Every structure is written in structure tokens, then in C-alpha cells.
Image 1 (cartoon, rainbow, N blue to C red):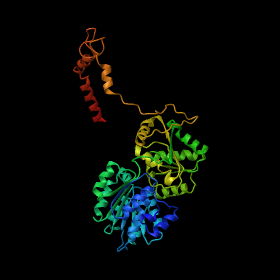
Image 2: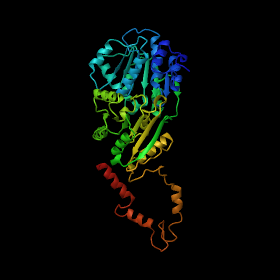
Image 3: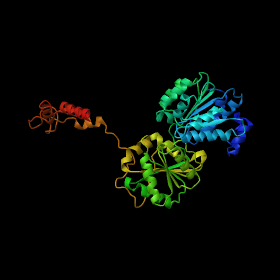
Image 4: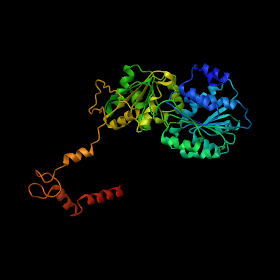
Length: 447
């Protein structure tokens, strides 16, 4: 199957060919014809499978079928992060190089006045983060009366980041008659709830099981104590001659600390997170792509929106608190059919997080200890099974009247059993269960 067989114009097919794409991916094969038909679409696929082209190409063709009447925008694409918004805008520019289309991208963290000037010149496609878009609307820099197509890109991430209120505000400002496209990595219950109020009898496209990882990504776990993680990471980078590795931490401060430690070890590194200015984030990413920085240390803000061709390694320096974020993190490697390696440095305190990830992806990740970095506390291969209450009851059955075991009534030696003693104490001085509940309640109130 080729892009032309999907119904795309010669100009768009030529643009995809310029990027080296000859055969559409599974998500593109299903989504492009559905979007071209004018129907609402709800699509989910693993990260790195070409979702952006899946809506950008048919969107551009639909806009090209009739000229712009006013100043637009005619298509509005919402994205959760600055990096993803910039990436989507780059795709719009690449695919529209042979058709007369004007586009712009707006997001926070930079001055708003230059963005306002771009919008006043008129455009066809606007890519935006929700917060900055509403700021521009409130300053009368943008109107939505000409919007024909709305795209929610990485919709599940937008919900995770708390953008639901901003999204609903934007929806209230749009024309009632429009085409709606919802693209996501997963079809969570929250996404389905959002889709019910947004989409009209949508075509559903799902090309992979929910929360699965790409087969092109080799995954492994390196057990190590927390205090030895940075030293192990430096060793892995040096011993394996890694020239480009994306490392994820949980916190912004953790990203900064790790970057400093790597630099002290003679490894060029840069951090990218929400506290960095947009200029600093753009420079760090550009230097990483250019090979001037070997290690890019990021928080989960970069889990979606970093599109780095042939990125060979992703390292989880710390496991994410939310298992689904693991899928998005390692999706930065093994993209577009390339092979990739995702490894996680895991300490004993992260055992529960690892168990949650393995349960989500339905596979046990291989453990590999490095000589000199063996942890003091080993990671469990499998989560501990919960005790069966029925078995506990069976073990306690028959206790009390025989052999002097604790139970109801009297024990075998004629003295009150432990249960009776406990009952007596609970009614004397509030030392029993009721008294304990009162004290724990008082502690909660004073906390």
C-alpha cells in the first residue's frame, strides 16, 4: 500500500516521499481515509507509529479543497506540551511544502506579542497548547468562528496534566459544526468519557493493544542501590560508548542534580524540564540532536513530544509513579520500525513501581546485575502474593477449647482465653479496639 492509494493528493505524496516515507504505517492506513471522509475519528496507537502524519496529511488535503475566506484558523490542533506542539507544527510545515498553507504554533514560556502578530496576518492551521491559546483569545488575538477541524493530539496526556477545564473552555468557543479528531496513545476510561461529549458517531481506530510496548524496543532492568545509580549510569555510558541517550528522572531537581554529576564525570549532559525557559529547552534539545550533548536528562514533560530519529537508548534513572508513563517514556526509542533499547535502573524501594509496570505491560522484564554495583537488597522477580483469608481461617479453626490455644470462651487449662481477656480490656479504660480507633482518629485530626 502507498500513500497515493489512500486518496492523498500528488503534492502530499511528494512531501511524504521527501521525508523518506513510502509505505504508510498501520495507524495511517486506517486513519487517513477516515479523516478524508469527513467523519469524526477516535484513534489510538503506540507512540512512534506515525499518528501525527495520520491526521496532518488528510487535514491538509481537506483544507486545500476550498480556499480560506477570512483570517482563520480553519484547523486547530491542541497539544499538551511545548515540545509536542513544536513537533506537530514542524510536521505541518514539512507536509504542506507543496501546497499554499499558512500555519503557526503558540505555547507558553515565551513572549506573547510575536505570537499575536503572527495570528493577525491570517492562517489556515494553528497548533497550540490550551493555556496559551486561551490567553490569546482573551486578548482578542484569535477567533474560532472559522474552525472546521479540531484535533486533540495526545489527548490522554492532556487529561493527565489537568487540561480538561481549558479544553472544555476552548470547546465552548468553537463552531458547533466541525470535524473532530481525537488521537491518543491509549483509550482510557477518561478518554472515552471525553469522546462521548465531543465526537459524533466516530470511526474508531486502534492498531495495538492498550498499554503495550513496541516489539522493536529491547527492555531490561538493572538492580542497583539508589546511591549508586549515577555512578552506574556513567559507567554504562562510557563502557558502551553511548553517544546519544535520553534519561528520565521523576523530579526537576533530580534532573539538575544528575546533569551536574554526569558533567563532573566528563560526560556532556543537559537537562530539560518545566522550570527551564523555552529557549533553554530548545537549545538543549537542538544540542542533543546535533550530537553536542551525549545525555539529555528529562522529566516526564518530555515523554511525549521528543521525536528523535534513531534514538538508540532510553534510560529510566527512576521509575515513574504512573505505570502508563513507562510506556510513553520508552516509546522515544524504537520509533518508525528502528531498533531501540530501554533500560531501567531500579532500587529496592521501587519494587512496587516495577511490579505495577510489569503488570501493565503483561511481561516480566529481565534483571541484569553489573559487577561492582550489586544491590544490598534484591528486587523480587514476582510481586508477593496476597494471603488467602480462607486459609487463615482454616489454620485458626478449632482453637480455643483444646490445647489451651487462644480462642473464644475458656482455654484447656480452665483460664479465660486470650480473646476473652482482650474483650475485657477493651471495655476497661478504652484500651481495646474502640479506644484505639478513637486515638487514631485524634491523630488524623491533629496531623
